[in-house]
Image 1 (cartoon, rainbow, N blue to C red):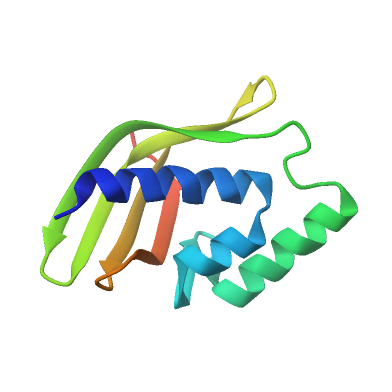
Image 2: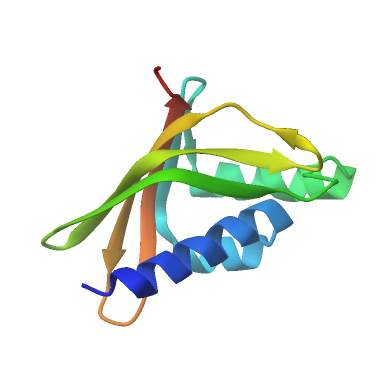
Length: 124
């Protein structure tokens, strides 16, 4: 179900994240969007507020950044689609650690919306 469209939306969403494009993030992320990490759960509003603040302070990925998937699985299950895999981020010349991630997406009939993202250090 629209997996190629979803992949494009994901790429734009991640690009918007690294660019600090909070307007784009707000459009793609569902109202109840959450990010779950080892540090806890962050709401859409708190994430967008934190990105806006970091951009104002000049500390939001000052050398740019991007994500790189090393594994990716897309599984449709009725009204939701789960994207799982592993990957890493780069910022400038530095590469982050390998992380395992899981995203939940919904198709509302006109657009993809991301409902949740969780990630943690990948286990070897």
